[in-house]
Length: 156
Image (tube, rainbow, N blue to C red; front, side):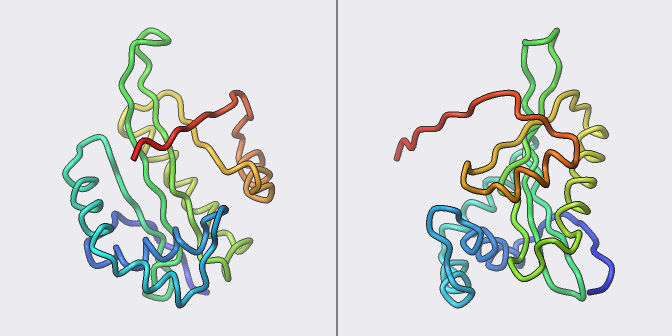
């Protein structure tokens, strides 16, 4: 694999981004073929348009050999807590399953932290499915601490 670069996602990246997310879904991972079909659904292009229109959201892809091999989203969360410290949330971190353990994720996380600092984020957080123990070890190696218990609720 050649050098990995991280860049802002473009509309033409959406099918591959959605496929990476589908293949990495801890609850129901898809095969590459299923994920590619999933990635072509119109809902993903619509979601990308909303993310791209938001100043608080930044969607990135990792690219190697001209192919999108990873993705993550960074959201800026202004707040009152901690004397108004701006928080950032890294989410939807996915690397092509065939390339996990090759350094793609580390390149993306270094990029995420650099961008976070540039936009004034003072505290960064992320969550990971409880079943993804390899991912947990990866984040801990990067310096993230398991400091909170997360909760979620699907509303639609």
